[in-house]
Image (cartoon, helix red, strand yellow):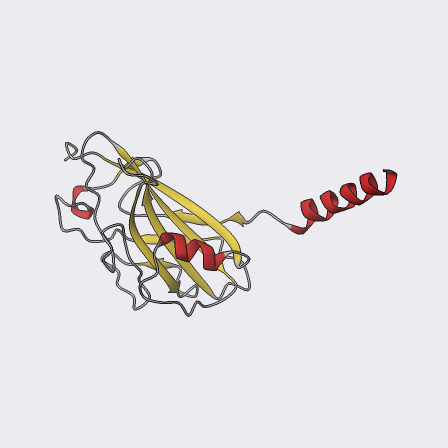
Length: 171
């Protein structure tokens, strides 16, 4: 019994020390502040252009950045994903408005690229989640949020989240 307790304690210590939490990555936009309203131009009521983003505190050893824009308030199971993108060059710590990349996956409409905010009612929260990775990804162009999150396991050096809000009545 004593051996079992000692073994379980050793396993617990190894598990706790083996997984270091990812450090914070700074994500900002010149178009909106954290927890602020996203301008209409980035929504279904506007141009549906992706907003500009800037990344800071990118750790040494980062080979690529990945981005997921997700609305957990959407009225469907798991929310709605607006954008899935990977292999953003960490040497360029920003992406411009209406950014396009060869490595864009499928949004919640099963389409490649950015899909503007379009909540059916009320104010929704949009998470711009950025991940610093220790690898460049070579994955299928039909990758969605779940598949990207799965392939990133064990490769995340840091992550950050910028939250914007949107309501169709906002002008």
